[in-house]
Amino acid sequence: MNDPAAAPAAPAAPAAPAAPREAVGPLIRGLSVLRALAGAGGRLSVGDLVRATALARSTVDRTLSTLERLDHVRLEGKSAVLAPRSAELGNAYLSACRLPDVCGPAADRLADELDESVSLAVPDRDGIRFVHQSTRRRTMSLAFRIGDRLPAECGAVGALLAVDWTEAEWDAWEARRRRDPLYDGFPAVPAEAARAGESFRQRVDAARRLGWSEDDQLIEPGLVALAMPVRDGAGRPVGVVSVVSHTSRRELASMRQALLPRLRETVAEMEAALEGEPEGALDGEPAAETRRAPVGHPRPPASAPSADSERARESKREMGPGFVESLARGLAVLAAFGQVPAGDRATGVPLSALAQTTGLARATVRRALITLDHLGYVASDDGLFRPLPRVLDLGFAPLSGLTLPLLAQPHLVTLVKRVQESASMSVLAGDDIQYVARVATERIMSVDITVGTRFPAYATSMGRVLLADLLAGLPPDERVERLRTPAPAALTPYTVTSAQRLSALLDQAGRDGYALVEGELEEGLRSLAVPVRDRDGRVVAAVNVSMPVGRRTAEESLADLLPPLREAAAGIEGDLWVAGRHTHIRTV
Image (cartoon, rainbow, N blue to C red):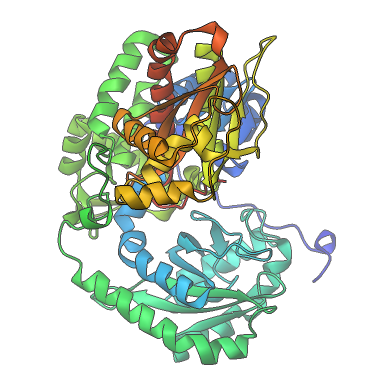
């Protein structure tokens, strides 16, 4: 590659068009703050935000206080951090575009069958945007996230989507290459991938002839891929599915021979699903038969933008000038695309439906839509509006990489400040619990446990709420036998080792929704735990509060600590349900 320092200066980016007279200025500024935070990986100091957005410090402060009140941002010291609630904006686009919900299951099955990473992507101007990922966790694996945008020329996907480009679109692509030769505007892509542009037109011609495309180490040495377009019922390409591997596992020639037929079958399955999708099937939630929560633990309803609007009005009354209500309304309109009835999403949503969903006046919704259209987050056609992939620039990619411990940490911090006792989260690891998050209280006498510590599940409060869910469906005799293997050991004189007694305690924990254990793991230690459930109602983790027994009686512990502990678990679940709508949240 030529030395960039010797290259002629790149022409300046074309000037942005002036905002329409009815555009909402605070919404423009608020979205620029979210975009800057996302571009920095989800965390930025307030001073750096001021520099990145070129906004006045007072404007940034008011915007952040509003975003914090709306749970889109957390303020930690001098830094602003994207909060999981911001994923609602990306969820609205992903629900509206249909591909993740309708085609994602087929992509997941293909990834499982081939033991390779499978992606779904959509066109986004002169680039492509990932909307679904089924990745294999290996030392060398796909690092792109849902929401990441790549230049069209980098990889197999863009060649297929460029097949129908107009001359104006080719001109825009050439102008971008001259303006940004080293991909400064594409942080997910290494600069070395710029060489892919040299063969792009030839690869587009080949994709037009073959109906599929390939990537022979264009983005990164060793990375190879095959891709095919997915078309809707009218024959229009709406996305691309790709299978990605590494030359240490497969050569591209062998991929063509072994995987291309199976890829064609999967594309046919996806297209049949798109064409045969029943009206109303996509209501912002998966089908009921695939997401059935246990009795007594109903799946949480989707958040209502109309409730958000009422909350915004209340916040304005409480915070006065510190709360920017027009920003809150604009975000509610954007989030509403994921909440309107599903039947119209494929073609667009009328203004009246958005007004009804948000509970806002039509004039307010109209101004928000004009602003979002101007910024490229929404498109309009014949009075119908639909969100565009650029919505994913508002933080979805960094949030899609969150793990359950990262989601839990802020809630554990708040819990510890409230109850002045140590709090933890754990998951099952075989017959043990493993600590994955912990916040210790600052006391002379405290419980000294670190992340990664493992204890026998049967002797701990977190283990009991986890086992109660795991073994709930077993017949009583089978559950008792399961609890005998391995045989429980007496860790203290108070440890329950009888399988029959443990089975009864698990029943009680399941009925009560909590477990209290005293002195069974360590003499003098009491622990109270509650479960954390995912969107399916499954228990995926447990959170607890632990303390020396001398501070409170068992009855006082339940009265004082159980309500705030349940509130913390509910907060973790709320973040998990939002952040996990279109992504898989790892528990470790």
